[in-house]
Image (cartoon, rainbow, N blue to C red; front, side, top):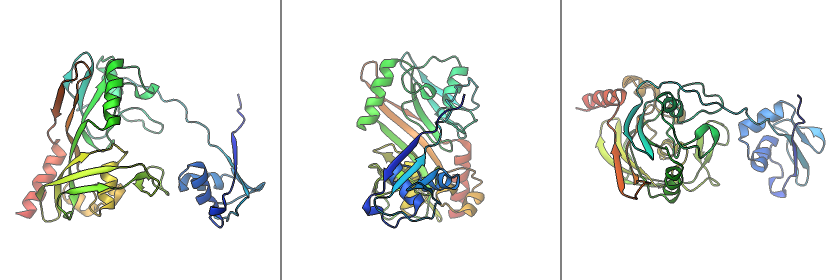
Length: 313
């Protein structure tokens, strides 16, 4: 059955006079510049009734019409065992796991690999049905390329109370990351808003109109080419540590997406960013008692540290 495409039309604000069509679409409709350019290239953008290219210029008061992209098909949870996923705590309300690298927290459009949700389902766990259908029980996430601690809600009460703690920033989330160079100062706070990257759908960036984002860091150990940091998140934005450290000119070692040196990653035999969630503390949803969990570095991160320590000795 065919569907009628959704068309949205808005007058161009005077403040965008002279902007490119793709930039105007991004500002007015909330798309990235990349997605806006794709829509224009597909003939889905009109300016005052005439088809517009991505590099055409807009004028104040002109009507910009965009054929909105179709909503993605709903994703399905597939019960599939996850190799290397360790369950370190399990009770009636929560399950705490150590997520291995290469595993997503939940299914999403375009991701066909293993997920925490699928792994728990395959292991017979019944988790909370709260939240979106594809991410039930998930109260926080780790990037696919980041390993470490996650808590998943099993009961509806646990989901509500844990989400509240994350929202109110009372959860203690600690990470260790190996970053290029030597941050100055060696301990500090990065307070910079994070939003979608203007040119890349899959990336995030420090942007003037982003959401408030605060990262605290302390030096653990310094090497010739890099520094091992303890990082505490005050907020929990997507890619927050990776974006903040890159903006601070000290990207996470191995994080090629955010500008890390590929030769250093190769030397340390890393195929992902050196970033691990080492500690997670929160009030248990059953009775409010404070609980903390810790996780050791996985083998690839330990091996990279051994190499860089040897190089620095």
